[in-house]
Image 1 (cartoon, helix red, strand yellow):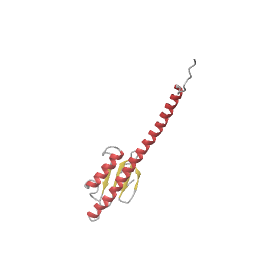
Image 2: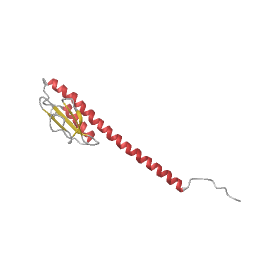
Image 3: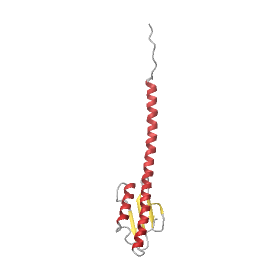
Image 4: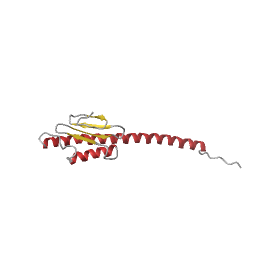
Length: 135
C-alpha cells in the first residue's frame, strides 16, 4: 500500500518568508524613527512659538520692554525647557537672550540644528542663538 504524501511547506519556503518579513519590518521601523524625529521637531517649534505669545504679554505688562522675558518669566522658562526636552532630551542646550527692545530664544531640534524665534517675528532653523536676534 502506498501512502499519499500530504503537501506542506519546505524549509526553503519558510526561510524565504521569514526573510521577507524581516526586511519589511526593518523598513517600517526606519520609517517610524523618522516620524518620531519629525514629531519631536514639531514639538520644539510649537513650544518656541508659544514663547513668542508669552513674551508679548510680558512686553505689554512692563510698559513696552522685553527685559525680563528670558530669566524672570516662569512661563517662558517652562516653554523653553519643554522645547529643549523635546529636542535634546535635556534643558541645558537651550538659549534665551533679552534686552529692553528685543529677545530671542533657541532650542535644539531632534533631527539636527536649532530652531530660533525672536521678537521680530522670525522663526527659522539656525545654530544656537547668542544675541537678541535670530542669526
